[in-house]
Image 1 (tube, rainbow, N blue to C red):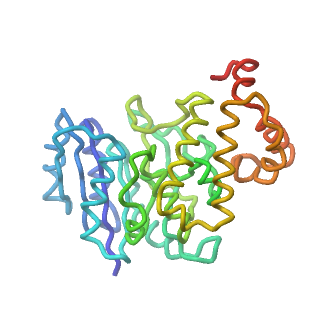
Image 2: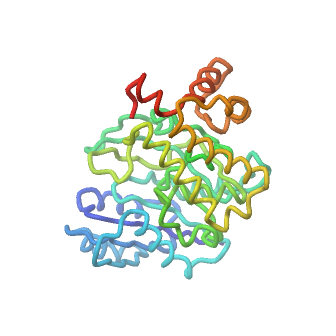
Length: 321
């Protein structure tokens, strides 16, 4: 029987961590190992973790200094890696959420079902109820309120889109061979993990909520977008350029490599030139990858036209930065 390892990164999480750990105890399908890395907390988080070691198969590593969200999860995955076989599974946990009791059981069952590509996916993810700081349910669907599509193509992911939130996932441990080490230029770890899975046997989604996702003022990643319009373009450019520097780029199909390089040129021109009409045909051809959250002809046409206007004009006319 396959084993499940949970990977948890914490930082100053004393307020919500006990409730999160209690929800791990309440799982109908118990984890076999739990690897927690505390990222230099200044509060009682390390003591809380240690207090649960007699109730959970919990291994605690305390880092003396804060290294950041991505690096802490990377460290935790590195620690879990030698303890799991290729056919085992990994679930990611955030310190402030609450897992619904059937989470691991539900995801483990569904990851063995063939996805849209007729393969068993390397990663499965569910939805979430959204709760506030006090635990009150704000929404029954995280995907619905944040406009998250159920499925994304590999090309959409190459442009910087992601529909995967790490704390709602289960993925195959063999994927660690592709995930690690997580490149330093990766904005968030779950975006990288989703890309690695999509480039292999793919990701699948299920509609069932598997956690209660807490939105509060101190989330490392939360609801909504905090970057400016040009800031998002620059992040997408950084993401796409980063992929070309990894071994994963050489494993892409030639057509996908060509798409990615063209996308990089497109974003660079869009950041620096007022109009880029020479991309009109390319944007129209790849609209579903560039705008995966849009549907219908009347949704795509304005996006295509908008997509050939560069940042200098948009900033001047529409006040977007």
